[in-house]
Length: 555
Image 1 (cartoon, rainbow, N blue to C red):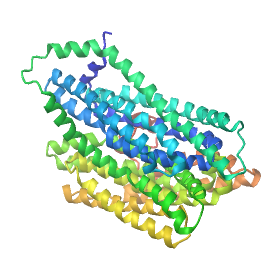
Image 2: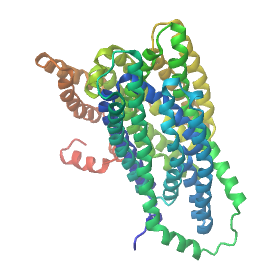
Image 3: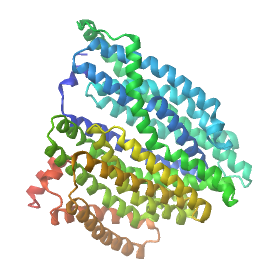
Image 4: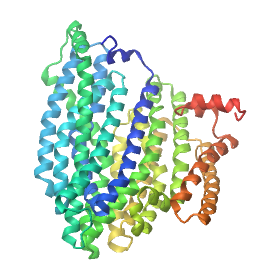
């Protein structure tokens, strides 16, 4: 192979590389959303509840053992490559393989044999299906981090999409197969024990999809490594570096670098299993309701509503990912004014995407759920109210995530972690109070999650201001996008109601309303002079958009 992946080191366009990785993340989330609809039809809300309960604790164990590996490995190896220590870089790569082998094996065993400590009894078989995936993910994470260190994001991007496609196909197929083999029919049993058994088998099939998705991505990344192996080993052999890291140094480096990543990621994700434990195990005892009902409602909240809101959050993260590396460079060069300018552009770009998404989800919560999850109609009031509450969190999570990245880029690594711990404690108290003393059911969890996002957004914003004296411009970043979003929704809702006068199905009326909303919002931003050429260039495809707009004399 004459052109190896390693040649991409010559490409220093960090914005382009970050955009490639972010877009892959968006595509993966969209695939994840699309397959949830047929999956929910097969396994039902109860099955989704068992799946999400197991998945939340699987995620935490994965974070502690392997999930932070790509970022940590990328950072460590990139440091060696920067000073052309190719032998040490490859020794770090091999040391990381050994590290994840040990840690991943232990974590898998803990999850498999200790499943009953984490989830309710019915979800234990589902969590055990997840256990081997933790061991495999460690190797996948090392390979992804290795190529990211070489500033080559395309391999990780392709592997993410492969992982999600295989996950989607196997999850749906295996869920149906497991139910059919166990129950001999796809019909939902009338008795409680039968409903629970059917839901568990469906959730196990979906969990298998997660594992086989990781296997498919691992096979792809292994093949990429083998294709480039000769070039990697040749370059390491030609390295004349005198200082070769010992095995002890390598493992100390890995541990020291991985630990902050683990703490940061774990704190940001631990609210899900905390809320899961409170709602599915403590709440039924407090309110004297069946655990089956609580688990079904958790499936609606976690397996449907949150999956929907994750899409615009992914778009917002993509905008930020393309700009944050520049902030790091400006801070390193002590060019604070340029850093502030880039931060302002990042916030504005993020709000331009997240604010209309939040307003749109709030306005069309019920028809969006029915379009994506038709089987939710019996619980549409609960599902739509939760989604309306979560829609507010779209803006708050986008802002807090962006500010967390900014704080990390300016060297404040532990500030976002401290803020997340404070937000977690406060939201947990609120969750307990609302569930124990009100009849809000899972809607209380949606309120608490939005409260958590608000605390995070405020604390991180204040931390950025204290760190570099940054103050966000308000009108074009928040006021005008919100005003444009309101007008957009009035127009699209009017179209929706007109079509609904002739059509009986909300889903038929929703699609034209969404199609109308996009250009209306875009034109309003231009009319209000909120979307200028500089902002457009910061967005994916912005340069081509500018060319088109200039041709039609809109800018």
